[in-house]
Length: 370
Picture 1: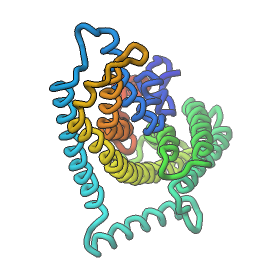
Picture 2: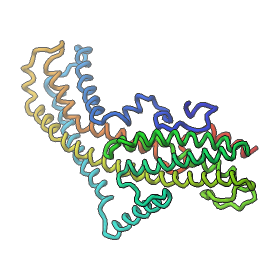
Picture 3: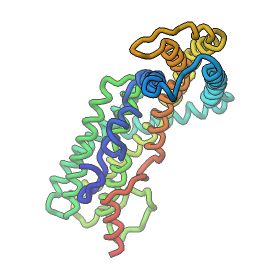
Picture 4: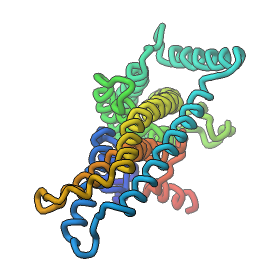
């Protein structure tokens, strides 16, 4: 069920189902191979020119002369500008990696401190080194605590109506953790697979839901510890309810660690992609410059090509293919930026800040006012 369904209290777990866009569009933006997307764009450029020359032969005619010369002069200038942009991108990426010894030491201390926090919370000696296994360890711990939450809910069954909500939450968390952990099993960093699987673990809503359920078990007379407090005595003297509240605290703790871990992996992936993008644009710029330059120098030779193929003049085919080759850097840039921009838009916030309207939260606000 989608998150827009009135009777559904929470958004779907997978990004594809949470998105409002068409699934095919989202697949092109995120999952499709970037080289295939770039090649498809170039095919559209080339075939568009050929189709226009075929359908409108008396109105749109690709002639040898000034139009072709003007077109490839513009493409030549754009390619040189694109190479300059690549240098700027590389400088931006490298500037985050360069710094004095003190800054590098702070980065190392921050990374090691976070890993020690993860190890202490999960009760392991050494956290995994690779991004995929590191995220799997956190998600696996969330699944284990979801099972413990289910057991605690069974012990407290019938005590209060909130217990049924806890059971549903634990089941959903366990299913989402299992599917995400499976997707990360064979994922390798450097591909989109790691980040794609991590994005399908809807931790933000689960933190919010776990804290909301935890608040239901707090003593109404206990002093407040602030919006981030997850402690406090469980309501009543029931040992099973106190255990249930403690397990909810454990769930929030591991999900809170997953948030910055995923954001760090996302940042590393963006840097990796930008470096690949820079190299790809530089590699494609050389043949693009060669093609655009030669068309400008020798376009007069095209006047001698009077034969046709599939009813289209040969000089139309040559100009269309040459234009596609000259536009290759732009197509590569567009294909990479589409994915980076889409991921960035859908992960703007960290923690339980949901940038979508959900029916469940709306009902909570109404219930609070009544």
